[in-house]
Length: 342
Ligand code: TRP
Image (cartoon, rainbow, N blue to C red; front, side, top):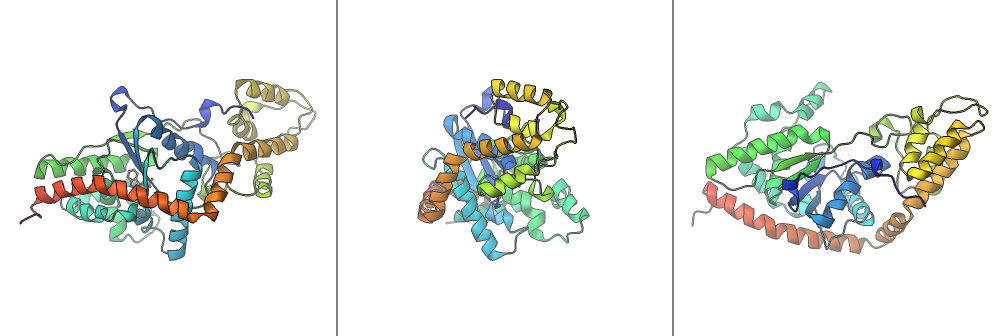
């Protein structure tokens, strides 16, 4: 199998001062993991466990702002946890847990609420976008950034890698943390955002950004037929077989190139430029390449699906570790606010 080219992953560029720091991020638990999630977020996140202290958690409290289906939330949480573990997150190296297993975060949310102006929350783009879409906002939606801030401060997160869409939330978090510190004295670390550079990220099968909402995803853990069917649906132009094709404007070539090293890309490029190439043949090859690339992960994923206890055990021990850190920060916050009165 060809080596994966580097441009296949979004990048978090750690500045020198960020090296060795505590990296922390929360991920929405949603089912149906696709290549965009993997290359855009999960792979670069998991790589932090090698040289940084990684704190990574599944934000099921946040999910309550949009999911009201009880079974679905349970299922998605457990599945997302299994996905992470199957893709290489090592619960010995990283601290990995489910947000609601450390409910102290909701207490901190309350403490932070009292130093957070409503105006600050009302200016949040994601809040305004939801209102613009006609959603009648509830209080959970408005205070979403406060819970997110508590997530970071409770565990002493120093560097927070997120997608571009979360940039403003992080600014709000820094604001709230500073406000708390200036009101009650130095209590929390002010987190540094680390925004993913996702230029050149893998496109969806229609050529747009890969996203479930566009219905253009390639799933990682589906069966071979399903994968092949989706790959066969990747958009291609109508250049006749006996004419040369342009790799640079081809979504199919673009997706394919994520799984090829330089030599492989060069070879594929010259096949495009030589008359006779059939897109159907290339698609079948690509389906096999993707299938093989994720094979070891898929096997691990299947093993975890059959042994949920392994997943639950990993999450329990992660929550325990997270909780120990949380206790220190929460105690300090309670003391500084005057809640510890005895
Ligand atoms: N809001 C983030 C998202 O939707 C998820 C999140 C929740 C998060 N808490 C966090 C990210 C803390 C970083 C740090 O992607």
